[in-house]
Structure formats: C-alpha cells, structure tokens
Image (cartoon, rainbow, N blue to C red; front, side, top):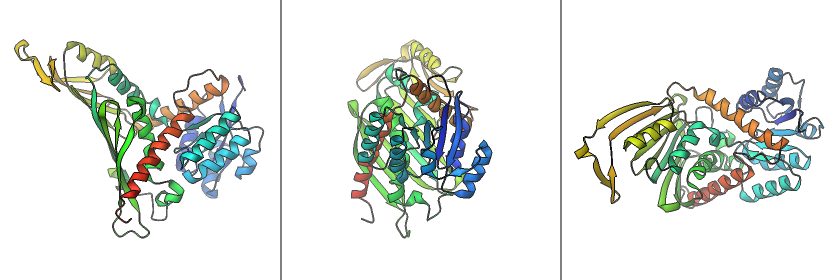
Length: 377
C-alpha cells in the first residue's frame, strides 16, 4: 500500500460522481477498479467511460480485495449505512458532503474509522482553494484590521431539481443546511475559528404540497462578536445561479464570487505597507487607486481608532479563471491529500474526519432552530 496503487471503488455515479471521478483518477497512483450504482443506465455509461467491465451491487464491490478506498457519491441518507459497511470491510472512505445526516451517525462513523485505522473524510474541497488561503492570511495577518461582519448569499438554481427529487425530501437530504450549507460552515470555521448559531429561519415555497423548503438562513457569532449571515435559496433558473460572499474589516471589505470562488474584489483604504501586503497576498492582481490622499488628508478614524491612509483602492484578482477548472483542481487536491495520509499516517491533512463532523453539527443546529419557526409549522 505504501508504494503501490490506491484502488478506488465508487458507490453512486450520477453526474457529479462522474465529474469527481474524472479528477480523482488523474492523481498519480490512483486507479478506478469498480463501480456500484443505483441508476443502471447512467452507471453503465459511466463504467464505459472508465473502462470498468460492469456495474456491481454495493455488497459485491465492498467484498473485493482489490478495492482500497471507497468513494461514496449517493444521496445523504445513504452515507452513514454505506460508509459503515465500507469501514467494517476494511476500506478507506471519501464521502460526498454531508458526512451524514445526524451528528450521532457521524460520531459512529468516526469511531469505526478510528477503530480500524481507516480514512474517513467528507469532500469539503473549499479549504483547498487558493482564494481560501489568501483570505485566511488576510484575516490572520490583519492586513485590513480586524474582521467585523460577513455574509454568504447563495441564489441557486432548482432547474434540475424536479418536485419529486430527493433534494426536497428532508428524510433523504437532511434539508438545505445539512445537504449544502456544510461547505460554508467549514470554510468560515477555517477562517474565524469555532462559532455558535444564534438564529435561523426557513421559508416554504408558496402553494407547494408537500411543502418544499426552498430557502434557509442563519446567523452565527464567532470570537470577538464577528457576526456572519448565511443564506441558501434554491429557486432560480440555471442561467441566474449566483453566489456572493463578503467579509467586512476595519479598513474595507473583500468580496468573493461563485460557490467555488475564483474572482476576488477588495475595496479598502490602505497605507503604503498595507497596499504592498495586499499585492503580495493576491499576486498579479489589478490594483486601481480611486483616491490618493495628500499628507494633510491621510488621517481618519473608525471604531475610535486613528488610521493613516495613503489611498482608497480597488483590487481585482482571478479574472479569467474558469470555475469548472478550479473545481477540478480542488478535487484533485482533496484526493492527493487523503492518499498521502493513507500512505503515511504522519502526513498533516488539510481536511480530516473532524471537518465533516463539526460542519455537520453546525448545520444540524441551524436546521433545528429554523424548524422551530417554519412558516408551515
């Protein structure tokens, strides 16, 4: 195992599973060996794409000696039973988000993975994004001062989510916070540390029967009273699918665009050293100076702190980056990182089983609070 191939078996191969596999098998030393799927026609087509002779049932795949790692890309309600079965069969597991639909399930999965010394990771690829790294340094190095507030707004498409899709069935998806929100709870925890959900709401699509919960939002409080608002709504046509994230600091704000952010815009007041630090954090960025201040005009104040500013600036980084290409890079990075740990347990991973468990715990608490005040309750 240390020097040889890591042989993958995939459980579930819809559109996203196929896309992820195309990235995973590009990682050196990783080879697809077997597939098990529920959508027979789609699975057979995917198997042909990768040269796998046949699509098996899950039990057969998990009994194979030539499968080291199982990638689970099924709906969320299947993650716990399938991961437990794989771990008990001695397989490593990479699971699509969320890790499970309840914290109790996640804890059981983590215990089983540790008992068998197996990998168990949810595919929370956001932390591998160079945009995430740059924002993390912006916060830790206090280039724009202390963080104060942030929001994430996800106006997502439901064009391919028909009324009977499992996504709307809370018993299968866990609800929007759990199925989708875990990515961003984990991302902000990486930036700001542990947080607490202080309020949450859910909205029902008018006239839907059974009720379709199409939008949710919550507020979290992080250290030093940094408040962050999260909104997820699935109600747009595909061509209007859009996301924006903004973090507000003492000296300005940073906006990220796309659910896999590639484009960054900074609006800030800065002195010469801070301007240089921003250019170092975002190499190759376009920097536009909106206003340059004469020595007599440099002094200003915010939060009862005296500031010295050389200019008001607009910085743009990431223009021309292709989101789907960045997505592929992140998936390859996830697999390479986890494979390195399989080969060497001393390898420090960027995401571990703890990320999947902790982001799920936040999502479950947000969902619990949202259900208390649901409009159809």
